[in-house]
Length: 223
Length: 256
Image 1 (tube, rainbow over the protein chains, first blue to last red):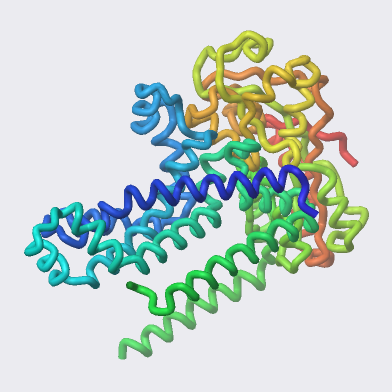
Image 2 (image 1 turned 180 degrees about the horizontal axis):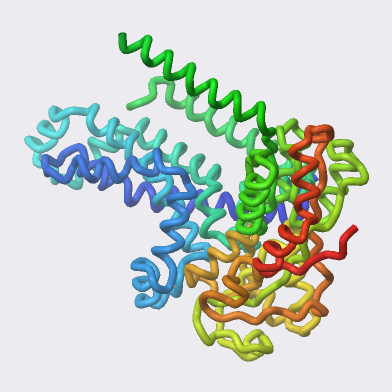
């Protein structure tokens, strides 16, 4: 059965995934909107950067994060200057890493959804004197709710399944950075296969249910 | 024709490859990550002397056990501890009677910063640091040894909130060398070069502070009758190999 450490890891994983998903939506929505509307020549570069975590092995991402967030790294110097201390081995650091790692899973569905509504609804809203912000909240968001749903579920699920990056920057601290995927890995390493099975089964069922819900809500992906 | 040339080239190449396997066998070895550097040198010497080829795979010992039990094609296993080879013998994946200690691991308290660590390890009691990295004591013998040292110094309670755990000692060193942890316990072999600590500062922990870290090798079922595998295990006990092992900061075990 699950022991106390396993349950702590489960709760921590859900906390990380929830907070990271909120951050991802706050960051990803304006980003996706800009990427769809802009004609800037930087568009291609930004698009590529957002997609990079899809291609890069998590070990590469984790390794760079470990260096950048160290006391001599750029992010590390910034976070120390802001009085936050260094980020590796902390809950905050895990959130930063998760947001970077899951960014394409949130930005790309939103981008597709925003592109799919076309110019027409925006033009109609403008003729009705709706402000851009009002247009976004009362026209764009309802029209793209499926896109938001997909982005939320994918961002959340992908963060839950995160392993390589956490292994590199986490430091395996209970209640701070020891998430489920790490705990399972440790059980396997310690040859506690029964424990590993229990926790792995929890994660498997969870993932299955989340994806099932996703396909139930959203039979036509992309919108 | 181009394609005929290509086929001829491939035939010649494959002839080369086959002659090589006729002349010498090749052996696949699973090696605990901490033994990477000495093993590379030992394997090179071994190939020079016997013409047997050696394929080396480095990683965590626990992972190797899981892989070996599930059909991984290794013939020799160099573990970071003595329990895992024993477990493989018990589960019939290794040959009984072939297990021996090829080296003794030595522990160092190390920091990437020069002058951070004194020669008595007093920094542990009085130093100003936020993170101390060790390998996970549950998984790695070096981590277990580190905990023993902290207990022996009566510092377990003070240090516990500052601990960060690497999955193995290679990762633990990464935490320290990137400066994310100010100091930590790793293997002497990771920081030694030409008999002294090459970078940063360190305290080589006296061996009576912790139980000996015996690193054992064992012949796996896959290699039971394999000439190169048997030769390699014998080679590990030669004076030549032992000299390399010592050069990399390991203690020598009494010969079996």
